[in-house]
Length: 164
Image 1 (cartoon, rainbow, N blue to C red):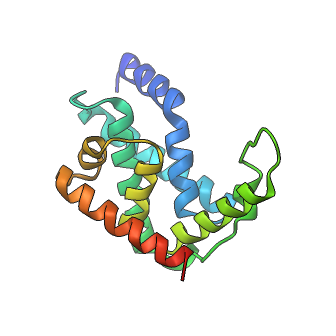
Image 2: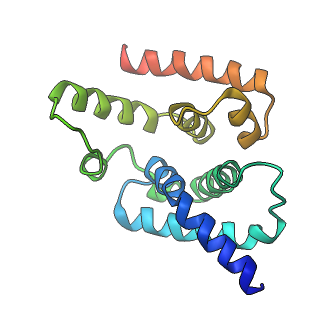
């Protein structure tokens, strides 16, 4: 790979690395697993980068590669995916004023999301990232209508988990 391509990749990765960290947070429960998944996603991004045509924004392409990598690894090894270890997430949340009620709601939400299947996690993650249904559809490789239908089902499922 030439230096220009390498520089472009590193620059794009640095500007968008929070996407990878957020995906890692959803699919892992401890720092070692997070680091391993981050490294694997970075490797997959690097391998795929020469084929990145720029049809979509780099961040959209990055979401797709990161989520596909996480889902593939999740399916291969359910060993590292446990129910919840929210302590590792809590210290990363920056709240201006401490509000125990908000923190408790976030804990419940994370616990509920952890109960979703791998595809549902990806969809709700993109939704919570304020992605449009078009962007969600493009990232997931599904139609916009299908994204809306799946999102409505996931919302219903989360409501049932949160309000049994």
